[in-house]
Image (cartoon, rainbow, N blue to C red; front, side):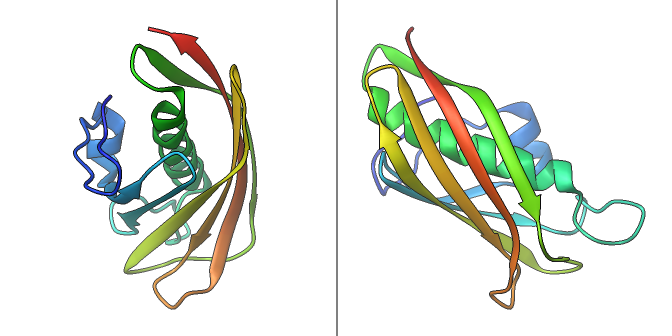
Length: 132
């Protein structure tokens, strides 16, 4: 995966493409992405919690790759998510902010809001930084 700060040129993974994730901004400190609700719903008609987690981990991992720098990569180590709302239509927007940017570990808070700006999920993602 490679990104350019704020001019998002990212090679998407297969799952990212399948879920319809679109990156708005990606840098080490702050990243934003969106994802459609349609196609990512559970049987109840609302966004699947696993889709929220995938969006959060994908965005945090890309931000961590930016922090890691050339010749290094980031891999998700831990994710904790609390789903507090229900998105049933439109797009959700994830905003990722760095909590800790270390040499071997990067930690991010990811807040996901529905199309009306209501919080639907909050995640904390820890990534481990490795040489490629």
